[in-house]
Amino acid sequence: MKTKTCSVSGKEFLIRDEDLVFYEKMGVPIPDICPDEVLRSMMLHRNERVLFRRKCDATGKPLISAYDGDVSFPVYANEVWWGDSWDGVEYGEGFDLEGSFFDQFQGLQSVVPREGTSVFNSENCDFNSHTRECKNSYLNTLAVKSEDTHYCYWAVGDRDVVDSLITNESELCYEAIDCESCYECVMVMDCHNSNNCFFSTELRNCRNCIGCNNLRHKENYIFNKPVSPAEFEAFQAKVMNGSYEGYLQGKQFFVDQISKVPHRSVTNTHSENVTGNHLLHCKDCFECYDSDHAQDSAYSVAVNDSKDVYFASSAGWPGGELIYYSTVSRGCTDLRFCYYSWFSHRLDYCDSCVSCSDCFGCIGLKHKEYCILNKQYEKEEYVRLRDRIVEYMKTTKEWGKFFPSSLSTFGYNHSQAQEYFPLTEAEVADRGYTWKADKGLTKYDGPVYEMPENISEVGDDILESILRCEVTGKNFRLIKSELEFYRKMNLPIPRVCPDERHRQRMNFRNPRQLWNRKCDTCKCEIRTTYGPERKEKVLCDNCYQEVVE
Image 1 (cartoon, rainbow, N blue to C red):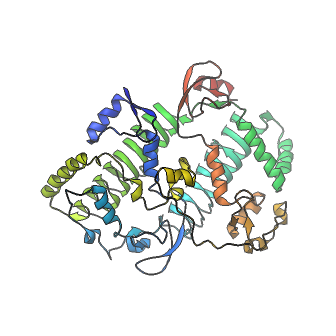
Image 2: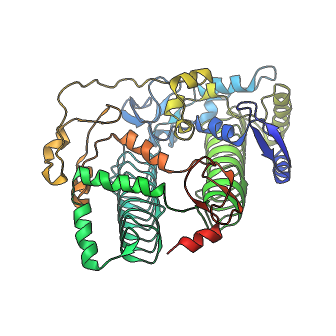
Image 3: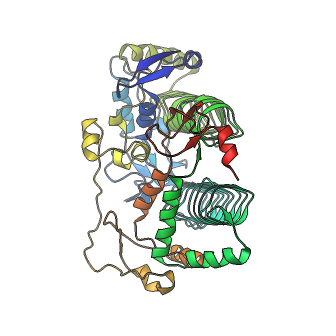
């Protein structure tokens, strides 16, 4: 093992022997930037949550899109982009072995049409991003097979879930974070297979819990103490009475609690020889996060059912292998420096290619092979030219680097990078990134709805009214199904806008980073997502099992 200094951050980062083997297998140089900067460089090319109103450049019809009206390339509605009315090879160009590859790619990028939305096989889900097989959902990101979900990030198999972050197979949940198979739960985090729980964290197979933590197979508990069913029912009626003040008190208890109770160093389950956090059924993974069934992978996030994945964001769904320095790959193998790849193989520096193989520097191709800059070649000619281009890019020092930020079609503040590596507008400018001001927003200075204290006092007139965020001052509105959810759950109307609520939920999660510190009980060395300056009590696995009730 050895270390290297990041050319961007100046931080030292580790180069393991296993890393060198993988880089040689993929034919790529050792990266000169640290894992965090690698992720940032990919994430700034992805807009997950910001939507714009524009028109389809093929039909002229209105479109809700991740691309604003300022992009140079055409933006097509899904049915047009995925249809047969256009072919990406029509935009093909020969490669100039005396010019910059990234400059030539940018020329191609400026003319090839892009997919307008990322909503597939869904009903009544126009105002969503990266959503498929969903129904009656609003302003979600990364939603799959879910119904009646609103303002959620990463919802899989959910129903009637609102304002939640990374939830699976759950129903009637509100402000749930990293939860699975939960039912009728409110303001809970890291809970699984639990029902009717509130303001709690780290519950497994529990029922009827309020203000609890680190419980297993418990029922009728308040503040980690057993109570009778009648006592629990009476306390629940008092806490969940539909008042805004009461909900704030419960949420403040939740915030105070997570700063005081013991925590596991990392939250990994059924995994072997791994470092990282929120890993499920993973093996031989190093510094990976939010992944399941990943193997022999490193420095990646959101890896599913894949192996040999390095420096990737969102790989799998379904499966993948030999993925390097790429973001959003679905069912792909042997990718380098790509983004938005579907069921493709042996691609380098490609964007939005579907069912393609053996392509280099291509955009928007479907069912193609042996193409460079969208130009078609015979197999032998493609192989020769690809090898020449790689050698040429080594001389220009472009080979091994991801697309520069100047090629991102999104402002940094609209990209996924801002979610995980937030910067101010001044910091964005200092780093040479682009900040895009919000345009086309109507300024409203009229009367704002006066919010009643209790949900029982809220009438349907709120749906025609303007609300104002107590934190940011931004205006926002409710939709009918959202109001129905609050009434069903006896929850007060939120006083904070959806974007701010999402930001607050993100802040509850630990960073995707590991530190060395000692278990606060046995003093053994641990790797944890809790930084050494944090005051929480953090335990190794063995000591944590001793505090679980």
